[in-house]
Image 1 (cartoon, one colour):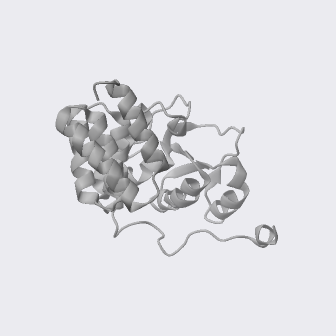
Image 2: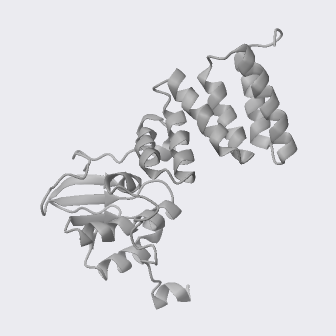
Image 3: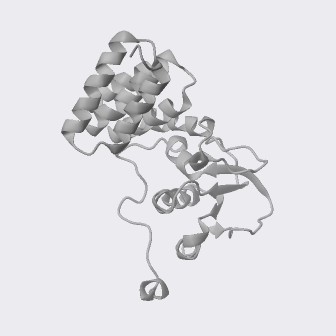
Length: 229
């Protein structure tokens, strides 16, 4: 440690993490984190990184303890909050998980780039029949998984308009139309929008638990023209 800086040593550890593939390799990295944390117990990044190692070893409660320590030491550590969110969700603790996941907007990562739209984000308050844009974020899988909340919004009487990924919007828009849900095509416009809701914020707004995930028995059907492809 005396011959290289902390940043250099940390970079080497991260390289090892990125290439680790076996339990033995993860255990070797874990021992290195244990050693450096004994020397530098106030470095939030070390607990954050060790959390990832522990997760890969299936030691989820120990991982949760580490990520909690990371955000205790650095309360504005946005990516640590996101990883804490994913760990809570993995353990089925959706109330804490989805709340912590709102930190994604503070990470500055391209994957969490917010939609540029000059209307407030809906927080679950009563908005009557005011139009709300429910819009995709992140990847195709997230779009397919969380578009189910558009059906829940419609069921609860919300005037919802949905924006999906361009690559799968034909499939999803066709399904939504069968439920009487308006959609907006990429590059298109819809007048009268007063609120918006990112898709991965819906579980927080609707108080998602393992017991109340909407439409858990299915909500999408492939039309013949898509099956033919």
